[in-house]
Length: 148
Image (tube, rainbow, N blue to C red; front, top):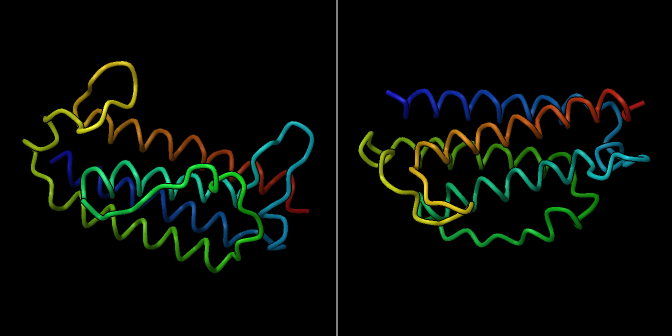
């Protein structure tokens, strides 16, 4: 039951992220920063895609994805089309990976210690959706402030 809910929520919120990126009037503004806004919308997308592919794809789906976290914040001027492709591929990967997990799998210990203590897989998947939504809100705010 929770697997279906998680699949639905990840799909919904990654589609919202895609909609936010499509809503930029000026593609160059995806990479704009200003004063205390240190991360551009483009870098936040790269970070979310990298984060989800690493923690869900690599460690739960055995996709072989290799994360390059530094590039998530240092790459610039990736095209809007490529960002959207990355979001769509991540959405597909998550849906595929989560569809293969049983309710028992979700209660097992997540295979990597990310924070100070061990945690269950379902706990970490809920944390990851909260992380996605935190940055989704930042992208929305970034667009409304800097896409002028």
